[in-house]
Length: 389
Image (cartoon, rainbow, N blue to C red; front, top):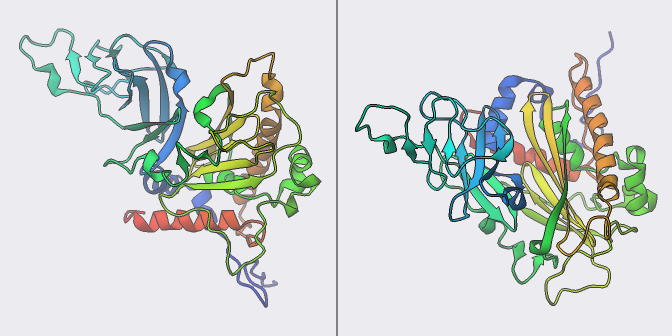
Protein backbone atom coordinates (compact mmCIF):
# COMPACT_ATOMS: atom_id res chain seq x y z
CA UNK A 1 0.00 0.00 0.00
CA UNK A 2 1.37 3.40 -0.93
CA UNK A 3 1.73 6.09 1.72
CA UNK A 4 -0.41 9.17 0.94
CA UNK A 5 1.47 12.46 0.65
CA UNK A 6 0.18 15.28 2.88
CA UNK A 7 -1.49 17.96 0.78
CA UNK A 8 -0.51 20.58 3.35
CA UNK A 9 3.23 20.79 2.66
CA UNK A 10 5.76 20.76 -0.14
CA UNK A 11 9.48 21.47 -0.26
CA UNK A 12 9.02 25.25 0.05
CA UNK A 13 5.74 25.88 1.84
CA UNK A 14 3.68 24.90 4.84
CA UNK A 15 0.07 25.53 3.92
CA UNK A 16 -2.84 26.33 6.20
CA UNK A 17 -5.67 23.80 5.80
CA UNK A 18 -8.29 25.15 8.18
CA UNK A 19 -10.23 23.13 10.78
CA UNK A 20 -10.40 19.31 10.70
CA UNK A 21 -13.40 17.91 8.90
CA UNK A 22 -15.26 16.72 12.02
CA UNK A 23 -16.00 20.38 12.78
CA UNK A 24 -18.03 20.52 9.57
CA UNK A 25 -20.20 17.44 10.16
CA UNK A 26 -20.50 16.83 13.91
CA UNK A 27 -23.56 17.98 15.92
CA UNK A 28 -21.45 18.49 19.07
CA UNK A 29 -19.17 20.83 17.17
CA UNK A 30 -22.15 22.83 15.93
CA UNK A 31 -23.26 23.34 19.54
CA UNK A 32 -19.76 24.58 20.35
CA UNK A 33 -19.83 26.90 17.34
CA UNK A 34 -23.16 28.38 18.38
CA UNK A 35 -21.99 28.90 21.96
CA UNK A 36 -18.49 30.23 21.29
CA UNK A 37 -18.87 31.98 17.95
CA UNK A 38 -22.51 33.00 17.39
CA UNK A 39 -24.15 33.70 20.73
CA UNK A 40 -21.70 36.40 21.92
CA UNK A 41 -21.95 38.40 18.68
CA UNK A 42 -24.36 40.56 16.71
CA UNK A 43 -26.37 39.13 13.82
CA UNK A 44 -28.57 40.79 11.24
CA UNK A 45 -32.22 39.89 11.87
CA UNK A 46 -34.15 42.15 9.50
CA UNK A 47 -34.87 45.72 8.43
CA UNK A 48 -36.81 48.25 10.46
CA UNK A 49 -39.28 48.72 7.60
CA UNK A 50 -40.47 45.17 8.30
CA UNK A 51 -41.88 46.54 11.56
CA UNK A 52 -43.59 49.60 10.09
CA UNK A 53 -47.09 48.16 10.49
CA UNK A 54 -48.56 48.70 13.97
CA UNK A 55 -47.95 45.75 16.33
CA UNK A 56 -45.91 43.86 13.73
CA UNK A 57 -43.16 41.45 14.75
CA UNK A 58 -40.41 39.34 13.21
CA UNK A 59 -38.50 36.43 14.70
CA UNK A 60 -34.89 35.28 14.65
CA UNK A 61 -33.85 31.72 15.59
CA UNK A 62 -30.38 30.55 16.55
CA UNK A 63 -30.01 26.93 17.63
CA UNK A 64 -32.78 26.10 20.11
CA UNK A 65 -33.47 29.73 20.95
CA UNK A 66 -35.76 32.11 19.12
CA UNK A 67 -36.32 35.82 19.59
CA UNK A 68 -39.45 37.83 18.89
CA UNK A 69 -38.58 41.36 17.78
CA UNK A 70 -41.12 44.17 17.86
CA UNK A 71 -41.58 47.80 18.85
CA UNK A 72 -42.87 49.12 22.13
CA UNK A 73 -45.42 51.94 22.39
CA UNK A 74 -42.45 54.35 22.27
CA UNK A 75 -41.46 52.81 18.89
CA UNK A 76 -38.14 51.58 20.30
CA UNK A 77 -37.07 48.08 19.27
CA UNK A 78 -37.45 45.28 21.80
CA UNK A 79 -36.35 41.65 21.58
CA UNK A 80 -37.46 38.84 23.88
CA UNK A 81 -36.86 35.12 23.94
CA UNK A 82 -39.92 33.60 22.32
CA UNK A 83 -40.96 31.48 25.27
CA UNK A 84 -43.65 32.06 27.87
CA UNK A 85 -42.27 31.84 31.44
CA UNK A 86 -45.47 30.09 32.49
CA UNK A 87 -45.17 26.68 30.79
CA UNK A 88 -42.76 27.24 27.92
CA UNK A 89 -45.13 27.76 25.01
CA UNK A 90 -43.92 30.19 22.30
CA UNK A 91 -45.29 33.70 22.60
CA UNK A 92 -45.71 33.81 18.81
CA UNK A 93 -45.92 30.78 16.55
CA UNK A 94 -45.21 32.30 13.13
CA UNK A 95 -42.00 33.78 11.73
CA UNK A 96 -43.59 37.21 11.30
CA UNK A 97 -46.96 38.83 11.68
CA UNK A 98 -48.94 41.20 13.86
CA UNK A 99 -49.60 40.83 17.57
CA UNK A 100 -51.92 42.87 19.75
CA UNK A 101 -51.04 45.94 21.76
CA UNK A 102 -49.22 43.55 24.11
CA UNK A 103 -47.70 40.10 23.61
CA UNK A 104 -50.06 37.27 24.57
CA UNK A 105 -49.27 33.57 24.83
CA UNK A 106 -52.05 31.63 23.11
CA UNK A 107 -51.66 28.62 25.40
CA UNK A 108 -53.15 30.04 28.60
CA UNK A 109 -53.59 33.70 27.72
CA UNK A 110 -50.81 35.21 29.82
CA UNK A 111 -50.07 38.70 28.52
CA UNK A 112 -46.78 40.63 28.58
CA UNK A 113 -45.75 44.23 27.98
CA UNK A 114 -43.87 44.95 24.77
CA UNK A 115 -41.97 47.72 26.51
CA UNK A 116 -40.30 45.73 29.29
CA UNK A 117 -41.61 42.15 29.03
CA UNK A 118 -43.38 42.27 32.42
CA UNK A 119 -46.43 40.04 32.85
CA UNK A 120 -49.55 42.21 32.83
CA UNK A 121 -52.17 39.52 33.34
CA UNK A 122 -52.25 35.78 34.07
CA UNK A 123 -55.62 34.24 33.31
CA UNK A 124 -57.57 33.23 36.44
CA UNK A 125 -54.58 32.92 38.73
CA UNK A 126 -55.55 33.17 42.42
CA UNK A 127 -56.68 36.62 43.51
CA UNK A 128 -53.84 38.75 44.80
CA UNK A 129 -51.14 36.97 42.77
CA UNK A 130 -48.33 39.38 41.91
CA UNK A 131 -48.11 38.57 38.19
CA UNK A 132 -45.37 41.18 37.62
CA UNK A 133 -42.84 38.78 39.16
CA UNK A 134 -42.86 36.93 35.84
CA UNK A 135 -41.53 38.46 32.66
CA UNK A 136 -40.19 37.61 29.24
CA UNK A 137 -36.43 37.30 29.10
CA UNK A 138 -34.96 40.10 27.03
CA UNK A 139 -32.21 39.83 24.43
CA UNK A 140 -30.02 42.55 22.97
CA UNK A 141 -31.30 44.43 19.93
CA UNK A 142 -30.05 47.49 18.07
CA UNK A 143 -31.13 49.62 15.13
CA UNK A 144 -28.05 50.38 13.04
CA UNK A 145 -28.98 52.65 10.12
CA UNK A 146 -32.22 50.70 9.66
CA UNK A 147 -30.58 47.28 9.99
CA UNK A 148 -31.82 45.27 12.99
CA UNK A 149 -29.08 43.44 14.86
CA UNK A 150 -29.62 41.01 17.74
CA UNK A 151 -27.29 39.27 20.16
CA UNK A 152 -27.77 36.30 22.49
CA UNK A 153 -24.84 37.35 24.69
CA UNK A 154 -25.32 36.82 28.43
CA UNK A 155 -24.07 40.29 29.30
CA UNK A 156 -24.45 43.51 27.33
CA UNK A 157 -22.15 43.36 24.29
CA UNK A 158 -20.32 46.33 22.84
CA UNK A 159 -22.90 48.12 20.73
CA UNK A 160 -22.93 47.82 16.97
CA UNK A 161 -22.55 51.58 16.70
CA UNK A 162 -19.40 51.46 18.81
CA UNK A 163 -17.95 48.45 16.98
CA UNK A 164 -18.41 50.23 13.67
CA UNK A 165 -17.62 53.73 14.97
CA UNK A 166 -14.40 54.00 12.98
CA UNK A 167 -16.03 52.61 9.84
CA UNK A 168 -19.41 54.32 9.57
CA UNK A 169 -19.93 57.92 10.70
CA UNK A 170 -22.59 60.59 10.01
CA UNK A 171 -19.97 62.62 8.16
CA UNK A 172 -18.51 59.85 5.99
CA UNK A 173 -21.40 57.38 5.79
CA UNK A 174 -20.28 54.00 4.48
CA UNK A 175 -17.23 55.20 2.55
CA UNK A 176 -19.34 58.05 1.24
CA UNK A 177 -22.68 56.23 0.83
CA UNK A 178 -25.69 57.48 2.81
CA UNK A 179 -27.41 54.17 3.61
CA UNK A 180 -29.99 55.92 5.80
CA UNK A 181 -31.60 57.16 2.57
CA UNK A 182 -32.04 53.68 1.09
CA UNK A 183 -35.08 51.43 1.39
CA UNK A 184 -35.72 47.69 1.33
CA UNK A 185 -36.70 46.47 -2.15
CA UNK A 186 -36.54 42.65 -2.03
CA UNK A 187 -35.79 39.68 0.24
CA UNK A 188 -34.88 36.07 -0.53
CA UNK A 189 -34.12 33.14 1.80
CA UNK A 190 -32.35 29.95 0.75
CA UNK A 191 -31.48 26.78 2.65
CA UNK A 192 -28.09 25.29 1.83
CA UNK A 193 -27.32 21.70 2.80
CA UNK A 194 -23.83 22.47 4.05
CA UNK A 195 -22.13 23.49 7.28
CA UNK A 196 -22.12 27.24 7.92
CA UNK A 197 -18.29 27.33 7.74
CA UNK A 198 -18.37 25.84 4.23
CA UNK A 199 -20.74 28.63 3.19
CA UNK A 200 -18.64 31.27 4.92
CA UNK A 201 -15.38 30.04 3.37
CA UNK A 202 -16.96 30.03 -0.07
CA UNK A 203 -18.10 33.62 0.43
CA UNK A 204 -14.68 34.72 1.66
CA UNK A 205 -12.80 33.82 -1.52
CA UNK A 206 -13.14 34.20 -5.27
CA UNK A 207 -10.64 31.49 -6.18
CA UNK A 208 -13.60 29.56 -7.58
CA UNK A 209 -15.28 32.46 -9.37
CA UNK A 210 -13.75 32.23 -12.85
CA UNK A 211 -14.83 28.61 -13.24
CA UNK A 212 -18.22 28.79 -11.57
CA UNK A 213 -19.63 32.32 -11.79
CA UNK A 214 -19.56 33.43 -15.44
CA UNK A 215 -22.02 36.27 -14.80
CA UNK A 216 -20.00 37.59 -11.87
CA UNK A 217 -16.74 37.08 -13.76
CA UNK A 218 -18.05 39.15 -16.64
CA UNK A 219 -19.15 41.93 -14.30
CA UNK A 220 -15.99 42.07 -12.18
CA UNK A 221 -12.44 41.63 -13.39
CA UNK A 222 -13.20 41.70 -17.10
CA UNK A 223 -14.01 38.00 -17.06
CA UNK A 224 -11.01 37.03 -14.93
CA UNK A 225 -11.65 37.32 -11.15
CA UNK A 226 -8.24 35.72 -10.58
CA UNK A 227 -6.92 39.26 -11.02
CA UNK A 228 -9.56 40.77 -8.76
CA UNK A 229 -9.65 42.19 -5.25
CA UNK A 230 -9.16 38.90 -3.37
CA UNK A 231 -5.59 38.35 -4.57
CA UNK A 232 -2.81 38.75 -1.99
CA UNK A 233 0.53 39.46 -3.65
CA UNK A 234 2.70 40.01 -0.55
CA UNK A 235 2.39 36.83 1.51
CA UNK A 236 4.60 38.28 4.25
CA UNK A 237 2.10 41.11 4.77
CA UNK A 238 -1.36 39.79 3.96
CA UNK A 239 -4.28 42.09 4.69
CA UNK A 240 -5.95 41.08 7.94
CA UNK A 241 -9.59 41.77 7.22
CA UNK A 242 -11.01 40.45 10.45
CA UNK A 243 -10.18 40.09 14.12
CA UNK A 244 -12.30 39.12 17.09
CA UNK A 245 -15.28 41.40 17.75
CA UNK A 246 -14.05 43.67 14.97
CA UNK A 247 -15.96 44.81 11.93
CA UNK A 248 -14.28 45.55 8.61
CA UNK A 249 -14.91 47.98 5.77
CA UNK A 250 -13.21 47.59 2.41
CA UNK A 251 -13.38 49.28 -0.96
CA UNK A 252 -14.03 46.55 -3.50
CA UNK A 253 -13.14 48.55 -6.58
CA UNK A 254 -14.86 49.87 -9.71
CA UNK A 255 -18.59 49.34 -9.77
CA UNK A 256 -20.53 46.98 -12.01
CA UNK A 257 -20.79 47.95 -15.66
CA UNK A 258 -24.59 48.03 -15.90
CA UNK A 259 -27.06 49.97 -13.77
CA UNK A 260 -30.04 48.01 -12.44
CA UNK A 261 -31.62 51.11 -10.86
CA UNK A 262 -31.71 54.51 -12.55
CA UNK A 263 -31.62 56.37 -9.21
CA UNK A 264 -28.07 56.30 -7.78
CA UNK A 265 -27.31 55.13 -4.26
CA UNK A 266 -27.36 58.30 -2.13
CA UNK A 267 -24.06 59.87 -1.12
CA UNK A 268 -23.39 61.96 1.98
CA UNK A 269 -22.88 65.66 1.45
CA UNK A 270 -19.38 66.40 0.20
CA UNK A 271 -18.73 62.82 -0.94
CA UNK A 272 -20.32 63.05 -4.36
CA UNK A 273 -18.40 61.18 -7.08
CA UNK A 274 -19.11 60.72 -10.76
CA UNK A 275 -18.29 56.99 -10.57
CA UNK A 276 -18.21 55.84 -6.92
CA UNK A 277 -16.68 52.44 -6.05
CA UNK A 278 -18.43 49.43 -4.52
CA UNK A 279 -17.81 49.01 -0.79
CA UNK A 280 -18.39 46.16 1.68
CA UNK A 281 -19.10 46.31 5.40
CA UNK A 282 -18.39 42.97 7.11
CA UNK A 283 -19.43 41.65 10.51
CA UNK A 284 -18.23 38.34 11.82
CA UNK A 285 -19.27 35.61 11.59
CA UNK A 286 -22.52 36.02 9.75
CA UNK A 287 -22.84 38.82 7.25
CA UNK A 288 -21.85 41.72 5.07
CA UNK A 289 -23.43 44.64 3.26
CA UNK A 290 -22.29 45.55 -0.25
CA UNK A 291 -23.19 49.05 -1.39
CA UNK A 292 -22.95 49.67 -5.12
CA UNK A 293 -23.45 52.87 -7.08
CA UNK A 294 -27.15 52.16 -7.74
CA UNK A 295 -28.28 49.64 -5.09
CA UNK A 296 -27.12 47.63 -2.08
CA UNK A 297 -27.11 43.92 -1.30
CA UNK A 298 -26.92 42.28 2.13
CA UNK A 299 -25.72 38.70 2.70
CA UNK A 300 -26.46 36.96 5.99
CA UNK A 301 -26.15 33.35 7.19
CA UNK A 302 -26.95 31.30 10.27
CA UNK A 303 -26.63 27.59 11.05
CA UNK A 304 -29.78 25.45 11.03
CA UNK A 305 -27.96 22.19 11.71
CA UNK A 306 -24.52 20.58 11.33
CA UNK A 307 -25.06 20.39 7.57
CA UNK A 308 -27.76 23.03 7.02
CA UNK A 309 -27.36 26.79 6.69
CA UNK A 310 -29.90 29.52 6.02
CA UNK A 311 -28.76 32.22 3.60
CA UNK A 312 -30.75 35.45 3.56
CA UNK A 313 -30.37 38.14 0.90
CA UNK A 314 -31.73 41.69 1.15
CA UNK A 315 -31.67 44.27 -1.66
CA UNK A 316 -31.94 48.03 -1.17
CA UNK A 317 -32.44 51.00 -3.48
CA UNK A 318 -32.58 54.77 -2.98
CA UNK A 319 -35.66 56.06 -1.18
CA UNK A 320 -36.59 58.04 -4.27
CA UNK A 321 -36.52 55.00 -6.59
CA UNK A 322 -39.91 53.70 -7.78
CA UNK A 323 -40.47 50.03 -8.55
CA UNK A 324 -41.49 49.51 -12.18
CA UNK A 325 -40.18 52.94 -13.11
CA UNK A 326 -36.60 53.14 -11.87
CA UNK A 327 -35.95 49.46 -11.24
CA UNK A 328 -37.32 45.99 -11.90
CA UNK A 329 -37.15 43.67 -8.87
CA UNK A 330 -36.12 40.58 -10.84
CA UNK A 331 -33.35 42.45 -12.65
CA UNK A 332 -32.26 44.00 -9.34
CA UNK A 333 -31.88 40.55 -7.76
CA UNK A 334 -30.51 38.77 -10.80
CA UNK A 335 -26.71 38.92 -10.48
CA UNK A 336 -26.32 38.11 -6.81
CA UNK A 337 -29.21 35.64 -6.70
CA UNK A 338 -27.78 33.69 -9.64
CA UNK A 339 -24.37 33.73 -7.96
CA UNK A 340 -25.80 32.48 -4.66
CA UNK A 341 -27.63 29.62 -6.36
CA UNK A 342 -24.37 28.62 -8.01
CA UNK A 343 -22.66 28.83 -4.61
CA UNK A 344 -25.41 26.71 -3.06
CA UNK A 345 -24.59 23.87 -5.45
CA UNK A 346 -20.85 24.26 -4.84
CA UNK A 347 -21.22 24.25 -1.05
CA UNK A 348 -23.51 21.23 -1.07
CA UNK A 349 -21.02 19.37 -3.26
CA UNK A 350 -18.21 20.25 -0.82
CA UNK A 351 -20.29 19.01 2.11
CA UNK A 352 -20.90 15.69 0.39
CA UNK A 353 -17.16 15.36 -0.16
CA UNK A 354 -16.44 16.11 3.49
CA UNK A 355 -18.72 13.25 4.51
CA UNK A 356 -16.63 10.71 2.61
CA UNK A 357 -14.20 8.55 4.57
CA UNK A 358 -11.21 9.42 2.38
CA UNK A 359 -11.33 13.22 2.50
CA UNK A 360 -8.84 15.22 4.55
CA UNK A 361 -8.62 19.03 4.20
CA UNK A 362 -6.16 20.24 1.58
CA UNK A 363 -4.19 23.50 1.38
CA UNK A 364 -5.86 26.89 1.20
CA UNK A 365 -4.25 29.02 -1.51
CA UNK A 366 -2.54 31.93 0.30
CA UNK A 367 -2.80 34.19 -2.75
CA UNK A 368 -6.48 33.65 -3.49
CA UNK A 369 -7.99 32.36 -0.23
CA UNK A 370 -6.31 34.65 2.29
CA UNK A 371 -9.62 36.01 3.70
CA UNK A 372 -10.78 32.43 4.30
CA UNK A 373 -7.51 31.71 6.11
CA UNK A 374 -8.01 34.78 8.30
CA UNK A 375 -11.58 33.73 8.97
CA UNK A 376 -10.51 30.29 10.20
CA UNK A 377 -7.83 31.80 12.43
CA UNK A 378 -10.43 34.16 13.89
CA UNK A 379 -12.79 31.20 14.33
CA UNK A 380 -10.14 29.26 16.27
CA UNK A 381 -9.54 32.28 18.52
CA UNK A 382 -13.24 32.26 19.37
CA UNK A 383 -13.06 28.60 20.36
CA UNK A 384 -9.88 29.18 22.36
CA UNK A 385 -11.55 32.02 24.24
CA UNK A 386 -14.46 29.82 25.19
CA UNK A 387 -13.24 27.42 27.86
CA UNK A 388 -15.92 24.80 27.31
CA UNK A 389 -15.13 24.48 23.61
